[in-house]
Image 1: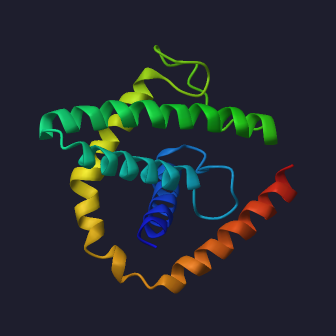
Image 2: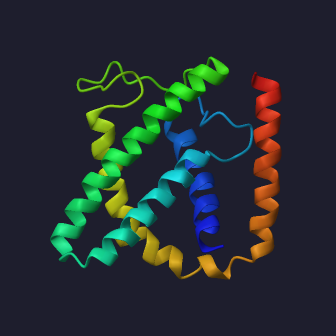
Length: 161
């Protein structure tokens, strides 16, 4: 449940942050107030960090490894997500072709650096804050959100296909 709570927290938080900064106010492909790619990205960061903890690296090496591993994995997720959304729904939600160091349409070196820095921010600053209250969230909220997410996925497929 711990990881599902993080998934939903950052899916919803990511949606609102992106909606605020993105001029059209849209975030993601789904109809609801969440963007699951941020939740998935958060889980990837948490799992990479957990794996690095097992390696018993010194702190500077751990931070550097976390930065690069997350930058690479999250860039791959972003690229795959962009191509899947284009293929499934014929919608292009983002395009980094105008970035100086773009890697195809859906990712760029600039974004990978942002994802790497965000990963460090998440693990060393946000996670300790979230850990203080995340387990206080009742599990039935996760069940309700899970049901709503599945419903949203089906509704999105029906409406946008």
